[in-house]
Image 1 (cartoon, rainbow, N blue to C red):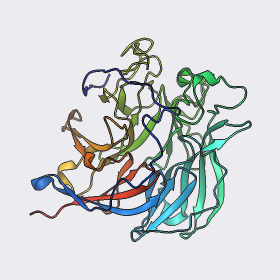
Image 2 (image 1 turned 90 degrees about the vertical axis):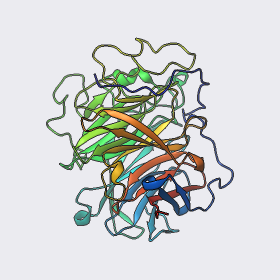
Image 3 (image 1 turned 180 degrees about the horizontal axis):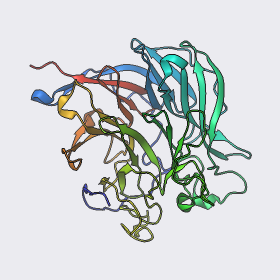
Image 4 (image 1 turned 180 degrees about the vertical axis):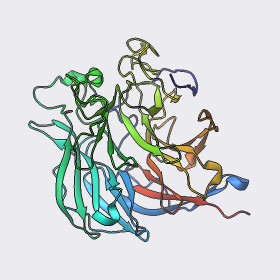
Length: 405
């Protein structure tokens, strides 16, 4: 069991709106402003600027070797930013998506050999038969560097369909809990996080992809050393199970370990160290509570389930995750960067600090003054940090060291 660090005591909270977005709602106006802004004091000062606006609920970001950025928009678009300018022409063609609720165009990643093969990957909500029925899929295509994709195809269509006729609508809407972060390891294998689709028991079903982290090859195959290959009743793509809605997934390049952020129910947001074959407990255990205030099934912990390394009570609506190992913020090396989206306790970036042994030792809340839901936060190739604001009038923010007074 991993060491825990609490963040306050449990407090009654209202149930989230449909889709479990926890406070999400359309933003009628641009609430960010134009900046720039300076924050912090002394050597900890940093500068925040708006790289670009005009992106609708941006969800994922990828850094192209030529310095441009790929950004997904949840309503169903893939955009490119060159020299700080958003190209008005979306990249395509794209597959059909069910862009409702929290579904649509989700994460994006480059193949580790992108400079040679030009392959990009993105996760999206794929419609199935029947109105409202959808799952998470991963699509691979070759990008020409302009506005055109070629040779596109699904390499993964998760067995995680939910919603529409024939399903138990009392379990909740099909428009949320897709998960859908992507991360490549050093061997070129792809990890995909999948949410519980508002149907918690499926997260413990080894014959379903719902509520799992999967591990596949770059063309969608199953690696022979996956933990459940050849085991009867188990999907061979499964790497770990028992997840609620893992909205962040990232490797720490300093040691090669995989981590995930996961939204809890009423409290119990988690930062987890992801270990091959382990079970992370949902919905049997949780450090949060059900929305009626009762304890989740078997309580806060039980034998056989992994505990989070860090958790948040009350919840902050954790989202994207990355680790900083660049040179521009030397004091932040090895720290986790976590996005937060909850209206009353979130809307910031949280820096989680670790000691030399890997134990969490502190946290710092960054840019709460901007009052923006942070969907993703990720270091760029230049050593600066980039964040996506999950707003109708969304933006890409650039965070860099500030000039010292």
